[in-house]
Length: 169
Image (cartoon, one colour):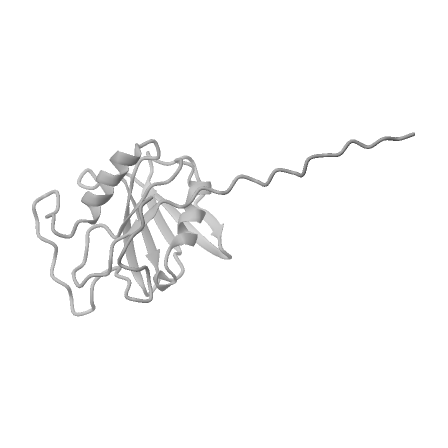
């Protein structure tokens, strides 16, 4: 006689962590930082596709990404993300700017995201985010934001993009 032992139902896979991304609200003036990204690790191959998928559709297809060469794990020169090729450029970090990721969308613009280190505490991340997205604060060099050009502000998303209220992490 063969007996069967009832098996427990398979455990569902753990939910993927949310993308920790805050974009600046739409404004009339251009910004130095268009948003803040707090990746879960420095593994560009796993973190970048998730972040790109979370961007507003108004930003279009991101085809070029520049990252700080020293801050990220090794990555190829190109990645296939969401059925498109994204070219990765690694450059040395600017001494005048924090760790940034620069996103390029042909014909639509350039967006600069400040990167919060993955091992930052939630409190530190909140402080860095508030500082980066505060329009009232002059730049670190004391300069005022540049005036808008006739072509409009660089890298801004209008009502079709993200809302003006950014959720907490």
